[in-house]
Image 1 (cartoon, one colour):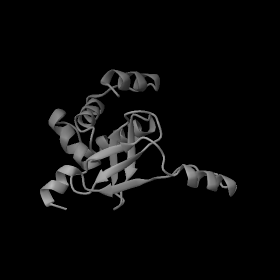
Image 2 (cartoon, one colour; image 1 turned 90 degrees about the horizontal axis):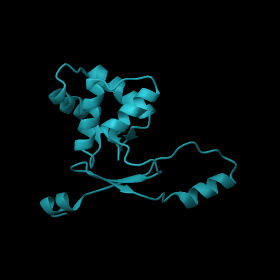
Image 3 (spheres, helix red, strand yellow; image 1 turned 90 degrees about the vertical axis):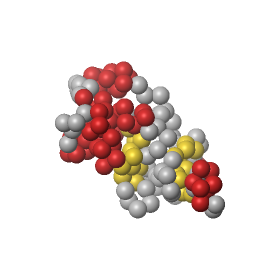
Image 4 (tube, helix red, strand yellow; image 1 turned 30 degrees about the vertical axis):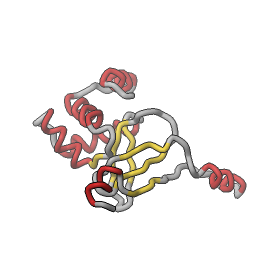
Amino acid sequence: MITIESVQKKLKEKGLKLTNQRKAIIEVLVENKDNFLTAEEIFLKSREKCPQTNFSTIYRNLEILTNLNIIHKTNIENNTSMFELVQNDSHHHHIICKKCGRTEFIDFCPLDKILSEVDKKNFTLTDHKFELYGYCDKCKKKDNR
């Protein structure tokens, strides 16, 4: 689990500081660890902690934190960029509730068989995305789906 201290250490290793804005972003993501958040949602929640924050600063910091593998960026079905705190460094995928946005990890890659077939085709795969969408128990009960 990422802590403010571990983020500060990673930033320091790269010659960067833990600014108030970066700290606010991390706090927001820790508080919402079971959900993906958009840049706009992170901006609005971060402003509650650090009122002088502007959107471009948040977006720039999201890119920095993504490049440092502190947060993870995923493009969901409508091509919206969503962000989450990196909980562990292992390769994983997600189950995402279409109503509330709650996310759960899938701790294995269901594409392993396909990836071994891709290797046989002499194709170098650099990345892949695999997310499952549906409704969590809470939302299902609310809507009787």
